Length: 426
Ligand SMILES: [Zn+2]
Ligand SMILES: [Zn+2]
Image (cartoon, rainbow, N blue to C red; front, side, top):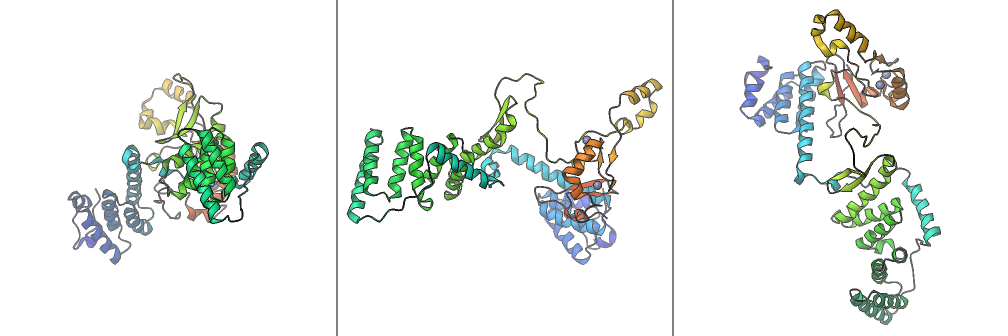
């Protein structure tokens, strides 16, 4: 249990950090710590007090801000490092419980509809396919305005068409086409005919009608139906475009359109990756899910992939691993501890013969990153480490993809939750 140094506790919150915090006066403790830090920003004990109290209240941003004072004052302080570890753990625990909690978890809101780099080119290819293979062109109709009477006649025909949909789709189509002949400008009538075509299973005809409507006049349901047809035609980038429009226009309220968008996206991202595996990736209520395509036996490999980047948690950072592939670099002593001294010679010999871990190989430049093999060292260098190796790129010190506090052996990762720590190596 840490104690707060006497001089900062003249009228302080109590003799012990814990004592004060056990009283559940976390808010008071935070306020007190803030006052102390205002008087002396280098007050490590106040920083810990405030950081810990804020963490207990789940105010992680605030805890981080408080602990930063301590870190700046004493970058090598082990207690500060420990507080950061606990903060990271609390953040991760909270994430875990939030994911378990169905009510606070909406898969759609967690998945972006961002356009991927290169999609513009794919979009052009797909447009070419639409034109050549299906004779569908993005040709919006701009006809001369029709007289009020013609517009009325067209509307009447369209109304009749609408009335027929439930009973006779042929009749509906005939009346709707008639309405379009009278007034081809009306986007509502074009959309009605697209709906009728769609219900008749004539998807290309439906798409042609949808494409004749000016973009600004297409309704959310037009965008959605167009997306569904484009999805079936296996034109994913264009389908995404249409579903994105449907989602945007309804401010995300059309969950069906948003779900369809994500199902197109996972198909185009994961189908090529899972083609040789007995699983496929689907998007459903709970988000992206791996679904077995056949019965799997214990021990079967369902899926394999290579992470772009990985990192150890602070909690197990003392377990030595290859910084590139994650292979364990523990030595027998790391694993067995002092017990190894009590091993008899046979056992020692066995360990020596069978211990699998190779010796760590370190980065030639910084001597900090360690690897299990020359291949890993080389791959890491070629793929990313030459950019972030502190000896090659001094700016990398500050971007803190991975900052080592050498004395504490602590590695601080930039976290996706913006609790990353902007600190430099002392
Ligand atoms: Zn390795
Ligand atoms: Zn290096």
